[in-house]
Length: 240
Image 1 (cartoon, rainbow, N blue to C red):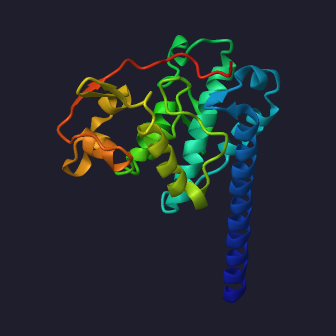
Image 2: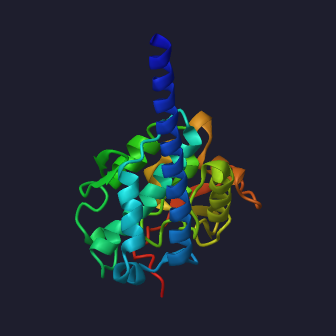
């Protein structure tokens, strides 16, 4: 009798695990197709999504019931990066037409989304679930896209567990080698305000901001270069 109970419990566990595996796999597949359909050149076709929201709504509905453990770090991070970007798009679409995410009060810190079994804000996803659980991963800042043109560009693909590290590294290198993102003014290096807001993420282990930037650049800066910041562009990253 005891062995039958054990067998039943094992079967139920495997069924649950298989169901979860299929759910998360389907989520990643559908998210990849969605981004491929509505993102190009780092911009989002919000107008088209607004007129045909079924794909976005399906993904947000799926995300409600997916619960990933931090012990599966790549799957957890990929899920929440995609969910952040999808939730941003949902927030814009819900208020479209809009010229900037800042035109909607509480866009990042008040409006909640039912994802992963939680009612959470965009700031919660970024600061508690991602940065909070993985404080050494500064590359998150180059893949979380806030709907403003000042952000690193959104890509026309989902972030996937099997390719996550490569994707994080690629987007970091793209941003830090882009002369519009890292600017030169005389002898001063002008950085995005992301580096001002999250200085501690980039200066772990005693590194300077220039040290972090140089890790990902082809043309290195003088380590003693002075740093400044240019104003963040909050205009909507909408397709023209």
